[in-house]
Image (cartoon, rainbow, N blue to C red):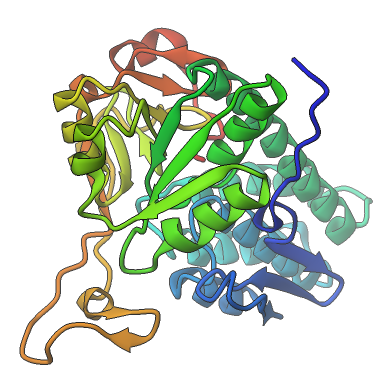
Length: 349
């Protein structure tokens, strides 16, 4: 590993800010054209921000846990330990309900409620101790992300062009950072990722901030780029990976994985750990968003008013299309996950 310095992108440094009286969430719906924050003084405001796609991918992990800190501050004045816990549990239920498929929120809420149960009946400053536990969870997640990145970089060869889809948050950033530190020259092709254009805006901007050569393509160019020999690796995040090795990710991942197999291009899905509570895809609730979102882009109507829309937010890629699952513990065959992961833990990009 070399001493090459890597500039970490804005979205990794300023995504969610926890302040004494509010949570500030960077509005990814308008970034990078505007750097605008949505201020949330209540758990309900945080929940609405997550539902309205102010933050996506790994962002809800930080936003939801920061929202729980707001709830802990409110609960600190309640008379009994059980009242404080009831208040936090209600807040947790509201936050978990915001996004069903991506389980980052459920995982961190469960973990932090456990911390609260240990704190509620003690003499410590409840709100301060809960915030400290939350910030510790953030740092632990960042460290797992750095570990995943090192493993991710190991499957990239010097000179590769990597295609990615949607905004893969720390998984793609830490992977590319590790590749740069290893002295590898890497180019990236980003699909635009309708209807929010996360790939064109968030991924492309973040990787370009790191000094990488980045090309944006429309969502219907992936197979053609592979056919032209422009791609050596397909690498995406995963909103969830089941123990059967199925990859649940932003809709459009499946068609890229099918094309990658046709052109003998390895596909690696990146997730901190698979979800041991999901044996297979039937155990994962698949979110469908407002069909109107497919009829617009960046607030502009793009479809005829005579048409209806459909917006399944995620699709499922079967394990036979996946060359490996990159995790914070290493890279494993999709079909072999149960051998390496047996217990519940933090997972997601």
